Length: 385
Ligand code: HMG
Image (cartoon, rainbow, N blue to C red; front, side, top):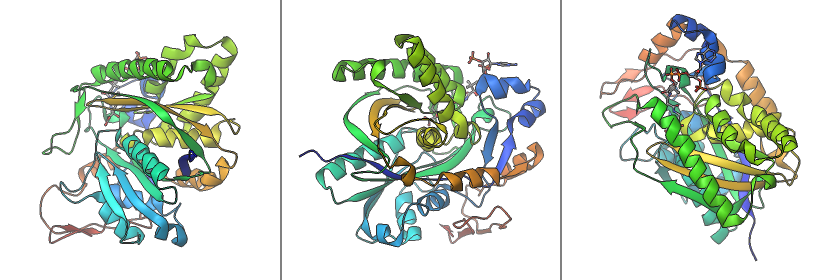
């Protein structure tokens, strides 16, 4: 008998500070509409030095793990490209912070923004073989390009935590998917750098090419076409990128379906538009946004395009489950986003420069009003506190 496997719960965390994109545009001498419409971002999460991928992941995962569930997590797969250690996995720090059982496998998965999708697919395969197991999959990153760069408007950060189980509440995942890998230099971050290097325009073209490739291959493998889908969810480095992806396939749909796919896309980009790029977590924040703001009913087929620069793309699909609303706390997310504090461009630049230095000095970080349940207090004896 085939076990149905997929996403049972989703938690999300982003820090309590944001930057207004119209203000950033003005400060950078750009027309605000370039950022608001041309790029499609309204607000950007500002990551204080007191949050890193581990603390953000803990803040996201603690929302979905009851004490009983913590004892049942068999594995933590932590997708990130903002690693804090070249050796020790962020998943090990996370498992400790969350108080998971020592009988847990905990590893980090890296392939740019694709890491969480790799984690999700590996988790699903694991649960198909071990139906009692629960796997915690994380996508957590700080998207950082540099002050006054073209990529600056596409920064952001946060963490998505997903629990993958048998008989999931939110979404069952199909076993068929299409993936494509090529060695491409569109975006990368050598180990000596804290900011990514990017060939911006080229990266957007590679994203669209990879989408074309995996969508064609998926249709060939499954005999499904656009008619079989109720919504498409995209990796959203900025919301215009997903809009371009959708436009690429919309002509395959009839006018009525085009309308409903466009409406679903609007729902799926709403939260990302106010947070920015999360790298590994972006696709899954977009799923959460679709679930929160969309008009979907149980049984809907959702298509997902995951893209990680460097580059790897995957198209896969899943079926929305009857109790999907029970798998996430939409009201908590509304409150989290509504209670964020707006910082000025000057404050954002100070925070940007105040990140934990890349050296061995002891540091005690000032804990301000942005503090969350889990936070980074500093570094002592070359160990994060
Ligand atoms: P840019 O050169 O500043 O922007 O960089 P532009 O000149 O191309 O303008 C952007 C859009 O705004 C254009 O629309 C303009 O027409 C429009 P488009 O032609 O694209 O439809 N525009 C306006 N619209 C309305 N009113 C106006 C106005 N002015 C202009 N007044 C770029 C943009 C995205 C290249 C840059 O921000 C960048 O390099 N970002 C980082 C790279 C990136 O996000 N790439 C995405 C694909 S790769 C990916 O998704 C992977 C990634 O997440 C990393 C990973 O995998 O780890 C990045």
